[in-house]
Length: 68
Image (cartoon, rainbow, N blue to C red; front, side, top):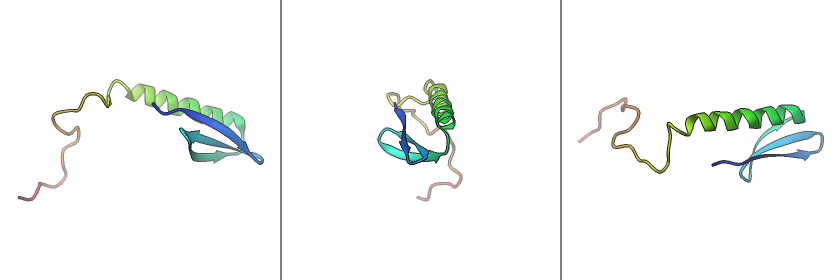
């Protein structure tokens, strides 16, 4: 699971996922909103995408047929 945080850099706030800087915004409130939304989206996907269970077939069909 990804852990989000924010750090202040000058007058801006940088949102981090794990230890990687991913976004810079001008307000602390907006940074907190983005972290909350990202966490909610990942939690909503958690039942659908589980790294422990590998599907037998891909979830999306291939656009082009495989060449033999």
